[in-house]
Length: 316
Image 1 (cartoon, rainbow, N blue to C red):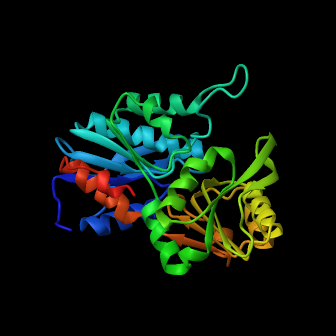
Image 2 (image 1 turned 45 degrees about the vertical axis):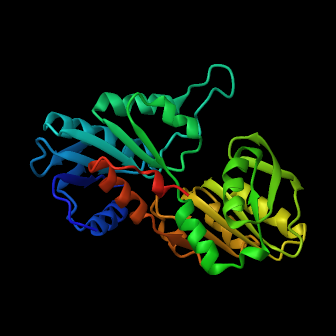
């Protein structure tokens, strides 16, 4: 990777380790910015170096605490805009509020669109994110947006750790079929689908399994693991249908509430996640949890955006 000088990378507080690894890949230092709090809790941002005329990239996942990290990103973008940055690209490994991408009942908001509007208003001129909950969120932006996928990293790991001839890719619900089908196509393996019913938010019940996993290693593919209910119930259902072992590859490890307890007590052999969301101490201690890194994907995306090159080769 050639050293690139005419752009700068900043980071908020949500995922600074990933930002540092991205900068290591790009062979450049992480730019200086102080993101703190006033005594009353208001966010205070101070950009620590000149950005006039520079293309700048701000790495910030809007992960829990979602509202704090979102406000940090918005205020950093405003500070960079007022400091005369030439362009401001928000690199958002995990796009919070993405599950609120449509009206699911009367008088409910479409918050994913609201967040897009706030980012544009703050001064962001481009957005880069990974495995958004719904691909159509890209259309919520009136600025360029690039939607990356963790699949190159996950597929490489699957091929190294498991025998492709003995695996079945599993979608945990009907909405994830397109994602799971893409994996099964590239691994040349069969596909199974869980028929899931969700009576309320953060609660689900697996009703049936479409496909055959008997005697095979089942791999559950999804974009978000939150409380872990869907994942662990799905794993149990796969075991009951004769799966030899159950693995799961999930991009964004939110892991809220009872998630770690559920994973530890589940039949899952291993849960592999990306580093788009930093893990809590309890998650780091979970022996069934393993993280794979995405800094090459984000680093390449940043370099190619700066050089006005195509990103299509980063997609599988």
